[in-house]
Length: 487
Ligand code: NAD
Image (cartoon, rainbow, N blue to C red):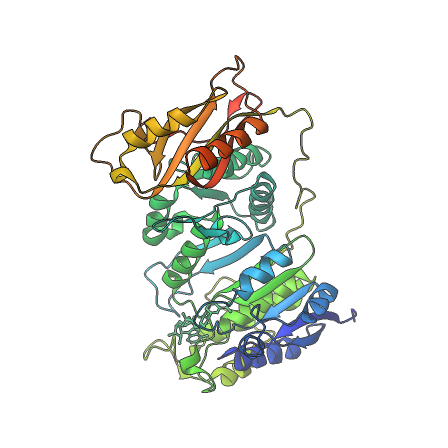
């Protein structure tokens, strides 16, 4: 008998405690070798004045066990509270969010009988960094951060997952026709890493048509890898069209820790009524057992769960007179699954679980000491609403103040070029990007001192309110910033 693996367990809010109880009862009956350590998260902790929703001491348990089985929590309405999920993912470095979605037709109603895909979503970067600022009266910004190591880890995970589970194709979704640098990096790394997996078919789709295909012909997709925000949206769509968001589980995997949870929330209106479907958390716990090296028990529970679905023993959310045979509550459903342990489903494909553990997993490219990064200009962002917001007036004022070493190259408003040669129809907010480049250096290089001098003159001499700057770099001689629309 293997030693029991300590895992951290949180019962969460709303329906959390009842679905966790049902899940742990099944794990216990199946002989899972686990030793749950319970921590408090969610509403109770928020109400104690902790805006993170988790006690500082709970991190010790997570750091010790490195495995977290988490029930959903209720996020209080109103400002000041942080998303516990985002905090947990980023603090524990859980870079891969893995959501298998399949249909259980004809036992669960769906229009897509052959749907069987896995969505692998980047989990730490993108707009979820939560770096937001109001810069002017009219404009706020949210920074989208994408890193090479971040892309490498998630894309490699997707290919290693496909390999472990004998899946044939990995499709990458981005919007790199618009975000050429950020999404372009993700796509480029997909192509680079894809070459290391010649046996797996590769495909790329722009996220809009990709989502349309996902909603209409999901059976044509196999493994999908994508950035954080797109993954967040499409994984709910995939779960919904598979039959019910109440059935799906997800794994959040990092180099050291992993967290497993249902994809649905705490469903407060049905809490405490013993009617919630515990399947999402059961499916998450199955993924957890595979992760901690107990795949046989995972297979046994999964088969028992599939058999229960086939038997028509359903909770209210998926019960349909005619195809279902019996309506059960949360604990009744768990009892039925326990009764089916050791049995194999007859119609639904039995599951087979493999650990994802390729030798290159978590591998990233080391930084290149020979990379040449050169500063060739600066974008200065201004809050400006004077002179009827006329870009011609702004342009002339900036040209007068820009001085010898840096000259005004162009001005944009929300990315659209308005000076020189703007169009009168372009709408102007109070947020202006003013690009300055070298006016004297033959090599086009600019120094930080020149930028500081420019800012001083803008502020002190011309009384402009600069709200931020972005340096313009080349990397190995290649421009690494966007140009203006209309440029
Ligand atoms: P929800 O997923 O809780 O509920 C959506 C709908 O699905 C409701 O009609 C609900 O009754 C039903 N439902 C959900 N799970 C079910 C289950 N297991 N069995 C039967 N029916 C089920 O989403 P929501 O209403 O938008 O959010 C409720 C709370 O959950 C919010 O506070 C939200 O912030 C939180 N939430 C938490 C997580 C998490 O902890 N991972 C995820 C999503 C939402």
